[in-house]
Every structure is written in C-alpha cells, then in structure tokens.
Image (tube, rainbow, N blue to C red; front, side, top):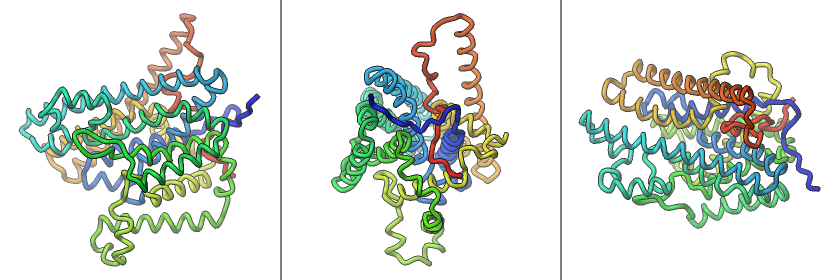
Length: 404
C-alpha cells in the first residue's frame, strides 16, 4: 500500500497560511490601485517578489494538501473530480469578474467622459470587436489590466490532477521536471499567446515553479529542506539578500539611489522580470518563506492576536476577497482620478477598499457556517463530506517546516 506523509499534524491548524494569503490579497489590492502613495504600502517596492508570488506559492501548497488527501482517500478519479470542481469555481469567479470589470470600465468611461480608461485598462478590444473580445476572454486569452492572476490559477489547477498523482508517488522527480520546465521556458521563450497580441503577463511555464514548490513542500518536501530553517548561515545570507533586494528595488524608484550603483548591477535587476519569474525573484520569495518559518513558528502565540483576525479571515475566503479586491482597485483608481489624488484621499480609498474586502470575508465565512448548520438540521448529506468550496483557502495543515 502506498504511504505518503502529508504535512498534516493531528488537530493543528496553520494560521500562517491564512494570514499570509490574506496579506497577499491586501498587498495586491494596494498595488493595483496604481497610486504613488498606496504603492508604498505594497510588498513590491521593497523586494524582488510581491503578493502575487506569495499567492501562487500558498495556492500550490494548499491544493496539494486538500486534493492530495482526496486522491489518497478516494483514488485518482475521485480526487480529480474534486480538483476540477475547484477549477470550475475559480474559472466562474474569473468570468464574473471579467464581465463586471469590462462593463464598469466601459460605462464609467462613457458616463464621465474619461476615454483614457478604455486604453489604460486594456478594454479597447471590447469596443472594436465585442463578440471576439468576449470569446477570447472566455478562452482566457484576453485579459484586461490586472485580470491576469486567476487565468494563471485556472491553468495551473487544471493541469494539476495528473501532476499531483505523480507527486504522490515520485515527488522529487516531478519537482525536478518542474525546475527543468522553468529553465526551458526561460531559455526558449515558451509562453501562451494573448489577445489581441503579445503573451501572458504571468508565463504559466515559469510561474508553475512556485506552485509546484508549494505542492512539493506539502507532500513531504518540507522535511528535506528543514535544515535551512534552522541554519544560522542561511539566516545571515538571507537577511543580506533581502537588504540587497530592497536597495536594488528602491533604486528603480529613486533616481538619487540609482546614481550610487554601478550601471551593470542596476540593469541586471531593473526592470524586474515578473513575466518569466526571474531567478532572483524566486530566490527572494524562498528566503522570505524560510525566514518566516524560522521567526513565526506554527504555535506562535501572536497568531491568535485579535489584530491578525481580519487578515486571517481574508486568507480563509481568498477567492472571493481576491476578486472583490481587483474590482475595487479599479473603482478606487477611478474615484481618485475623478476627484483628487492627494495623500488623504488615497489613504481613505485604500482604507475603504481593505474594509470592504474584510467585510466580504466575514460575510462569506458567516454564510457558509449558516449553510452548514442548516444542512445538519435538515439532515441532508453534504456531498462527499469534504471541505466547503473555500477549503483550499481554509485548509488545516502545516505551511512550512516547524521552527522551534
């Protein structure tokens, strides 16, 4: 009988998964508003990686935990159907967001005489060829500005069933294949085409590496790299690299700092190659994860503090919160564009957006509890007895290796 050791200690919920996925959603919202002030509250101005990297990594981890268990318990077909059901939910969320997003940009552009919105948010294809644009949107080839993450998520999850089946048996070999695919994609320029031109902003052949690393760690790989969490040498080198990343990233934003750096060094890291997930970007997130596991152990008392509950709740209802955050980023930009982009209005827009995202998370959590309670009272079966649709985000398990 096949024995697989998932990173799932008994009765232990890793709140770090929820906390950091919620944080990733908040950071992506602030970064997508596209204002000078709010961007400084996002992760991207202080290192090579940002909220999107963290989101994809945690998605791979939780997907392997949830659906790996389903596959072990019920077999390949059972696990695949549950996984594809989740893919459909993500796809449906993207299409709903896609339609609302396009309609809102077009309506506000016409209603407030702001034609620049059409071009800024890549809605021009809808104006020139609406039927073709909608069709290409359904095929995930046409993506307005900031609507790139969910299509990547759909592709990675859609291709995951056979990969997960193999990882449950030969995780190291599959991980090696993922690494080789990453370097091959960068070397030969592999990517998917977009409509009406260009390629995917998040190259799935490259970004799969983050997803697969998360899955590999969840399926036992965490023990393999456990020594990195406790290593003092890794700690010193990691902290130095994070400082280096801050300096190089800020140099791209502050001309005065750029002048202090040798041009070849600056040009090696600017502009940041996000599309193909530059190696220095991957390394940056890896160090953040390692140091996070070291300084925030799974049983850290501070994780239960009330101050973190909004972030944790947003992480548990990640799909809904993410979709709402993308839409609110556009609305926030529009409000600032039509009124004032001074510091106070920007802060008010950012605060209001985070508050709405948090309210959505609490509402979805409450509504799911009510639905489950009603189902129990009615003595109706709960399908496969597995997780609710948000289980991938609210999964019980260990995100990283224990650090004590």
